[in-house]
Length: 227
Image (cartoon, rainbow, N blue to C red; front, top):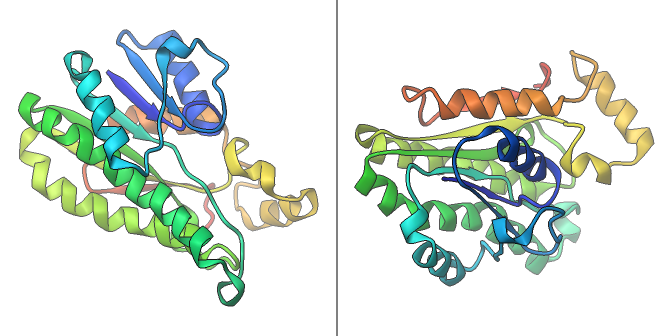
């Protein structure tokens, strides 16, 4: 089964729709605030930052959870310079992007270990290594996924379970919609490829990680050369 968090919009929605038409296996999407355009039968409303909700979902779907591919797309951001930031909103980004990703992994990992199969793909970001003002919470949450993945990778590599990160640059999908038009042009000038990431490149990379069992604990940049 393919599980995609944050599947009602942006990159998660794109991947969900792509696999819905091409994958020969069950697919389940999660959402929280944005109602899905697809049939709600294939979705579950879930606050991934609440482990009790995640655990309940896993128990309810247990009989269907076979050969799991978990794609963690759900994420939020909060823009503020550090000295003016709201601690509650800052923490909320960590709770969703980092703890929420951990919660999903923790929920399905025992099943993966039992079945001796699992694929976990997290969406990190190039901002984890590229200094960018005003997004300390987002950058912290995304860079933390690197350490999380490396540790879980070595714990489970012998059981045919892989976990990797995609460090996404600026895509035509997702949070780019929040960037003012005048700033988008400045961003483009910084990208050696001189274009935003095409969604197909994201899908290709997800498929590559999903079908290459010897890659684990790694992070792949999809950034058009942006460093």
